[in-house]
Length: 132
Image 1 (cartoon, rainbow, N blue to C red):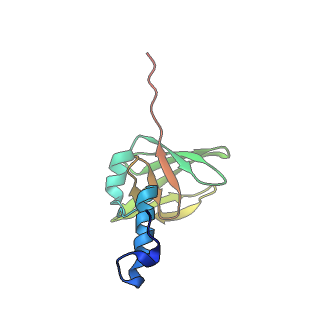
Image 2 (cartoon, rainbow, N blue to C red):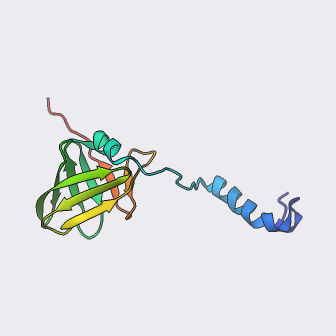
Image 3 (cartoon, rainbow, N blue to C red):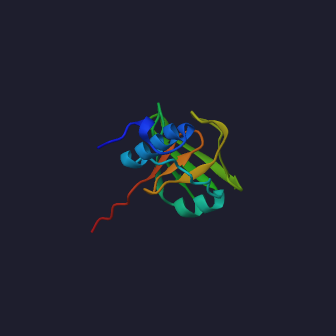
């Protein structure tokens, strides 16, 4: 038999938060508690790997090199720029294109191997294909 909220044996002001927590557990909802990565650690992890940049209206592919270069390929063209990092701040610098100027974000790594930026962009490493 399921009890109603009024029948729970806990103080009234804890009933709603307790119910919300139980629903979150039952539905598999979790709050991200990851802290931003160090910019250098992010660069070490993704250097040489193509990343799908999932952002509207121009999804793109970005490739970073360890020496600070970045290439952004999209339907509207290919753009070359640079990246710099200090602490948890990761900045891309482009002289032209849809993201011209300096754009800085914080980056968090997700459990599934993707990354999320503080501006809501998702970054997905692109799987490599080998030919035999």
